[in-house]
Amino acid sequence: MRVLIVEDEAHLANLIARVLQRERYEVDVTYDGEAGLARALGGRYDAIVLDRMLPGVDGLEVCRRMRAAGVHTPVLLLSARRELDERVQGLDAGADDYLGKPFAFTELLARIRALTRRGDRPVLPAVLRVGDLTLDPRAHRVERAGREIALSQREFALLEYLMRNAGQVLTREQIRERIWGPAAEPESNIVDLYIHYLRKKLDDRPESLIRTVRGVGYMLRA
Ligand code: CA
Image (spheres, rainbow, N blue to C red):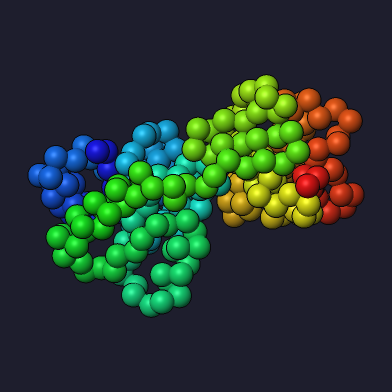
């Protein structure tokens, strides 16, 4: 079992790491959101212990971007705040569980065991189908009319977002915020660029799949 810890309080991060290692988990530790996100996107972990308050990219944002990129590793969010809406925000961002600080290590271990067990259960989203397109978030696989299409992580996340909202117009702002996060430059044409890449790869030359809604954004036809 591999666990990633993302926690900027080095003392606490190292303490959690030692407790987990004693239980024979393999552990990686990062001390900020940027590095944590890179690890989460690149590595194969069975669970991620993610602090909510991090310098730079915070825990909620790390979680949102991971999910947008199609990474479904179970996340246990740590937070000093105990209020209900904080909890709801965490779950909305795609966290699987929530633990308020300070916590007992026995509880942390129990939560991690529960999360990693969940791996066997179909908590992960099922295969999405729209027309002759299928997208499997688990296998990170896209097919059009039975032909596999290789997509980059961003392209995959963008297509997943469009497919989950098929038949609805998504504004450029919504897409940019969801796929690139609030830090993306509003005046950049990154959304149009990636739609162009997607259309090319999907062989959507008559633009029958992804419709441009002039002055607003894009829509995948249901
Ligand atoms: Ca913190």
